[in-house]
Structure formats: C-alpha cells, structure tokens
Length: 211
Image 1 (cartoon, rainbow, N blue to C red):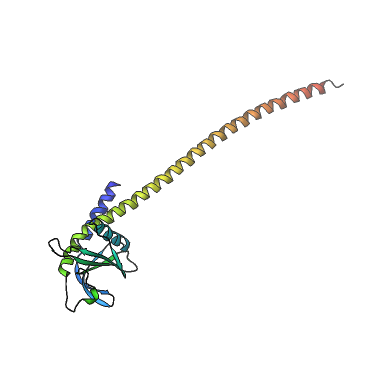
Image 2 (cartoon, one colour):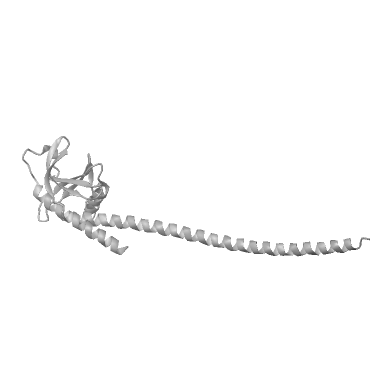
C-alpha cells in the first residue's frame, strides 16, 4: 500500500510540475480579462477545494462572484507593498476527461474588473509566479484527497472482511451443531433399531407359544 501511494505521489508531482502556466483570456461579467491559466490532471472539485485550503491557511476567506472564487486584499507578490484582489475560475477540461483548466487574474484592491481599461495587464506576471508557487500545494492537497479516499477503501474492505469472518464463525457454529444433530440422530437410530430387535424377539417368543 505504501509503495502504491508513493508511486502515485511521484507521478502526480511530475505531472503537475510539468504543467506550463500560460497567458490567457478570461470572461468576467461581459468583459475579457487578461489572465494566466494552467491545465491540471485533477477534478474541478479537487482544484477548487485545494484553492480554498491554500488561502485558508493564509487566513484569507473566499468571496463568490459568478463562478469565480475571489480572494480580496491579498498580496500577489511576496515583495509587494500593496494588496490585490485575486480571481480564480476552474472549468472541466472536457466532458470525457475529469481534468481541469484553472484561470487566474488579479486586480488592484477593491477595483472592479469590469472597470479595467483596455491594455491594462495589471498583475499578469505576478499571477504567473503566484500560480507556479501554488501548484505544489494543489498537488499536495490532491494527494491527501487520494490518500483519504484510499483509506476509506481500506476501511470498507476491512469491514467486509470482518463480516465475512463473522459469517464464517456463524457457519462453523451451525456446522458443529449440525454434526452434533447428525450424531444424535445416529444414536437414536441405533437405539430404535435395538428397540425393534427387542420387540421382534418378544413377538417371536409369543408366536412360538402357539400350538
């Protein structure tokens, strides 16, 4: 089990670290926002929860905005002396694939994205670096989810095994009882056979007295 989890972990890390964070465009309230994006081999639900967990550990709670997770008043760059508002959107890559496309853009603190002026590429470079630094956390979260799911599978398998063991014990008890009943029946057969022999002897004795 440990070897399997380790192999899954190493494969997952290799896949995520190999993903390229690229510039993209994101639709937001009838506007097009300059963004960055990355494709991830995880379900949208896992990626969304991983993002929440990442910011929760930073003490930042999300706001919702029409399909986006928004984290306000947050430093985009470690050396930034100002805050930004961060917008994340996760989409399923395709109907056939349970993988995700993560879009991310930033605005100055408290600035509505739909008021952004044409040509304003605020935060794109910072968003790229922020997302790259965030990927190991997403991978780690996914691994923990997989471990939790596998632990649940182990618990289910152990529970089923215990039920089978209990059924086996019940069958053993029934078998022992059946064997006892069979032996008792054989003893009763022998007694009854002896009774038949005794009764026949008595009958033969009575018949022999006839003249």
